[in-house]
Image 1 (cartoon, chains in turn yellow, green):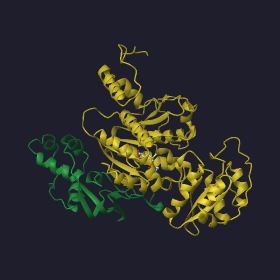
Image 2 (cartoon, rainbow over the protein chains, first blue to last red):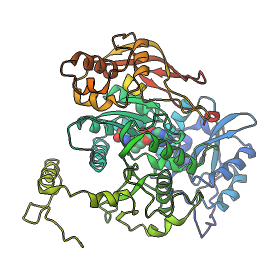
Image 3 (cartoon, each protein chain N blue to C red):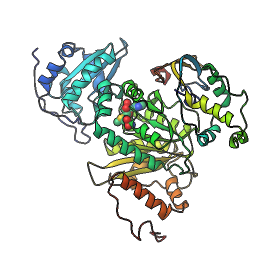
Image 4 (cartoon, rainbow over the protein chains, first blue to last red):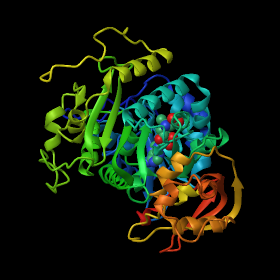
Length: 414
Length: 127
Ligand SMILES: C[S@@+](CC[C@H](N)C(=O)[O-])C[C@H]1O[C@@H](n2cnc3c(N)ncnc32)[C@H](O)[C@@H]1O
């Protein structure tokens, strides 16, 4: 098959370039070899392209669904770097700020079977290092990804460490009573296992059946639900003692279907989470926001749902080890004091972005319950600190030696 | 899925005001033994909707729970009433709905349960 190759220099919109991270190396032949049958199926229907391009503006993903309402069929549409398949799509693509060119539209008859072929191809192309830019979660986390997930000792270790830290930030009462927790985006159950090891019961929610199947195979102790957090959680009010979520919430920032609006999905999610948590409970999310704007969007939707709290950043100065946790508290203290944003009504309220748009903030406190709580508490005491340090040492972490200064009282004005 | 989860689940289709409790249509039920932890049961007791639990347990073929909710003090001091806690333990944590469906009480929408996993994904027009 002879495809015309033409490199296009994209005139990247200067104010907000929406760029896909592309590896411009040899995608083209590999692609053709990998999925020739798909290449033959390229649709030449301009209509879909048009719709796709408009849609693409808000999402920034390399591949996603587009529903064609006339024929009520779904298409998976992908952009390939340097593969110029449909010349007519080119100029609009360039105008939208993408350096990737080449487009192909795949009618989804049996979405799962077909995605099995297309997703590996996308991954091989290394079009982006961010999985959520490659494909929708239920497509990206297919059988092979799910298996890879749990068979990589590196991933297992990272997930365990993040989950352990999230549980710590959840600050459950230390009374040896097991709690009933939620694991959002539980995947293959790695994070859930950490919850079980800490003696708690849990429900896990995930949108990928493949990931959940691996969780079943691994005989996790929690209950599993196939569901989309962006549709809101169907749980009764006040019944959950706490929630964690590891590397999942940033997925909500993308529109996977033309009906998706990230802001509304975040809103549905945080609103329903707020309702199902018991008062005083916390929710801790480890997130990989793609940009400051994305972090802001997530945080703002959480606060608008009624949560208090803020961001905790571990290793803020290390690009590799840097980890962000969104720590939310569910109404333990009246939030009306000091709270200028609440009840302002407008959804597009941009006030919040002012205080932390430089991305350098290590711990952003929002003058909300968390802060209050901290001053209320008498502090954990030396014994507690020593125990925690010992725990951490046992996990092989680098922990400063104990000294007479360990856990000493600060001056009150500190 | 265990009944502790069923007791918390409700149908959140747009417009549904009373999506709890989901009716259970059981095709396959399995039992798995779990360590008995009275502390956890006492902690959870206040959150449980008793009637829904009794009904759900019955639909999985377990009819040992008392019809009326025991009062909280009975649960708190159930040293002499260990058997009640044991029953609660069995109903909440050891029975699994493996295959079947959950049915929304208001709309009749069925959520299939396969390999113990309820499929709670909503259709686009239900969101
Ligand atoms: C990086 S994995 C984390 C897996 C899990 N925490 C673990 O430790 O094994 C992210 C998970 O989020 C899930 N996810 C993404 N978007 C979702 C959504 N809208 N609703 C539910 N789960 C979602 C994905 O399917 C994936 O399993």
